[in-house]
Length: 297
Image 1 (tube, rainbow, N blue to C red):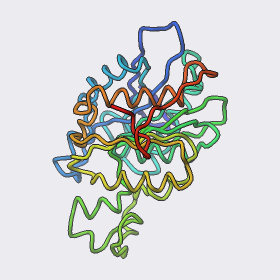
Image 2 (image 1 turned 90 degrees about the horizontal axis):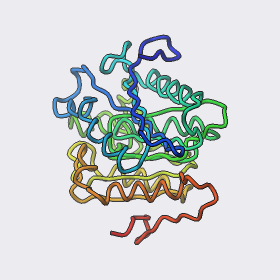
Image 3 (image 1 turned 120 degrees about the vertical axis):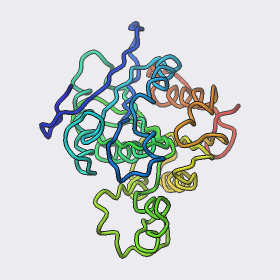
Image 4 (image 1 turned 90 degrees about the vertical axis):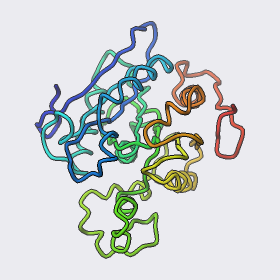
């Protein structure tokens, strides 16, 4: 149990590797369960912490890292009500907590966000340009925001199956809304955009991030159109060349890590080797086989 800066209870889950001979990357994942009945039933499975445990186990085994997970306000057993402003505060508090710990290498913190988590992560990195080294995006329902003036550095961001904005997703989840609500990622009218309190405009901030970003896109995503990840990547490379875009032909919204198999984890490892190296002066390169920076099979 842990209290955030808003003095409400938040649940965190911390998984530590048994290997202690050298510092390890800390991957911050925001996964949560929600009792929000406004979400379509097909989205409920995206928000249960129990469904993340096998993913976390394999992540720790393959990447030799510690994992820090946060359940947002209003999700799972955490108090409060979910909102964009509140979730940003929670993610910032999580980063602040990590940067004050003495048992981890605070120069090797990696933000991992899937779906909404990617939106949160993008905001977090943008708000902390001096603290965050790189960003990692995945297609999930979580997002992160960190702001703390210390020597700690978030080394990278990983985004997996993330959307351009909630405004663009509104017309996908509820087709009739596309005539009234849309974001900069679509050409529809915007006459009711003002009623969306948590727009999560990732497409509008992704180009402002200067840290390394890894995009993991499942081409069979049944919730977020893969084109959203393509648009996020295209917006990023306009100003940031330290990014990689990797597609997984059989990846769905929540199982890209599973269907991607060894290639999925190898992609992440190569990215971390380049941007979050254990040996600071090492000459580690990310091997690519196309103009998007995809690792060779």
